[in-house]
Image 1 (cartoon, protein in one colour):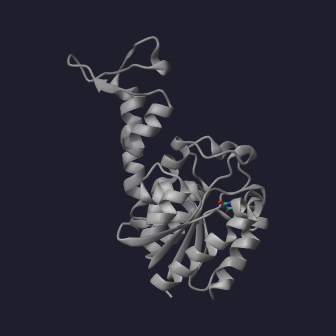
Image 2 (cartoon, protein in one colour; image 1 turned 120 degrees about the horizontal axis):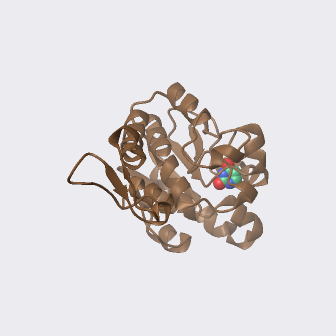
Length: 242
Ligand code: URA
C-alpha cells in the first residue's frame, strides 16, 4: 500500500474510481455513505490523490530552505492544528551520521528543535560517548515534524503525510549512516512492521544508506538497564562509519 493509499484510507476516501459515463468520480466507504457523483470541477478525491502526488514530487525537488518553509506552513495532517512550532531538524547539513527520532515532544514543540528535553540530553550524551556531536557531523530529525497531542504515538496517516519531508531531508543530507532511534524511526526507514529488538539484530539500509537501529532515548530513560545495548549499537554504528 502506498503512502497515498494510507492517507486516503485514513480519510475514508478509498476506493476511488471514475464513472464510465462521464468524468465524475464516485467514492465509497464511511466518508461516502451516500454515494455521490461529483463533477470533475469539484472532484475532491481524485484531486486529492493528484495533490498528494504533486506534493510529494514538489518536496522531492526542494532545497533545504524550501523544505524548512514548506514544513513551517504544512497542513497536510491534523497535527498542524495543535502544534506550536514545527520541528524540521537540526545540525550539520552535510553530516556523516543522521539520527532519526520519532516525533517532537512538549519541549521540542515549544522550541522548534528536536531532542531538547531529557531524552535529548541523553541522546547528546550517547553521541558524545562515541565522539559525535549534534551540529558537527550529525543531523537530527524526526519521522514526523509536529507534536502529537499528549505525546501519543504517531498515526500511520501522519507518518505517511510527513514521509516526503523525511525522504527529502535524507536525500539532501546524504548521510553515510542513519541511526534509527526507536520503533517508529526503524519501521519507517526499514519499511518493516517489527520490534526494535528484531530490527536492532538485523539493521538494514535505506536507499543504500546503512541503518543502525537502537532504542529510543525516552525508552532508555525508563529502562536504564537497556543502555548497555544502546552502547553496543553506537559502537556498531561507529565501526561502520567512524
Ligand atoms: N523524542 C523524539 O523522538 N524526538 C524528539 O525530538 C524528542 C523526543
